[in-house]
Length: 119
Length: 108
Image 1 (tube, each protein chain N blue to C red):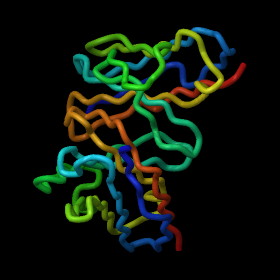
Image 2 (image 1 turned 90 degrees about the vertical axis):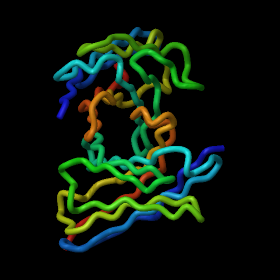
Image 3 (image 1 turned 30 degrees about the vertical axis):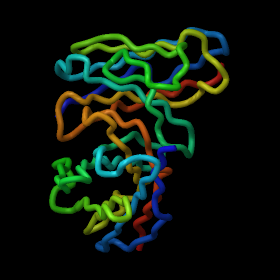
Image 4 (image 1 turned 45 degrees about the horizontal axis):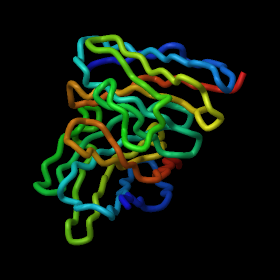
């Protein structure tokens, strides 16, 4: 069955970087785009960007341009999202999600990774 | 960016009730709209895509309609497991994809 399993919770200081992983199984990793969405506590969903695991092509929300980098390692079917220059407002649960038809709909999601930014 | 709004922000309902949630886009998005259900501490779950297509495995009591700027999610007979927060999301124009603020369905 399709699964996206994310890395564990992180605590970072302001100004640091965090790298979250998302390991895919149960399907061909390179066939479906991976998107990243975050959610601050008690808040709504915010789309951050996408990556084509086959080509490595990416697209980011303007809000995160220059601070976010999405990469992958196809040999281990894993996608990564790195966010730099962290500030307290980046404290959130970060999700990876699969786009099955490259149409912007997300059918499978990781379990989420809590990133806490605190001095 | 396309802005998404939802109404109501919360609704109290009983098991068996018909529940309707509305989503509006700040500009036309054709039928490029999805609905998700999220329960506390869990990832969102895709219910509806392309405005009215039911995702595999989702009960038929969920339905979606609309096009252009106005969309509706209907739960025909609310079940105990349906108490959750529902989000709409536009997929017409990106970056960025954008989500509505959510509608919380709780027990009356």
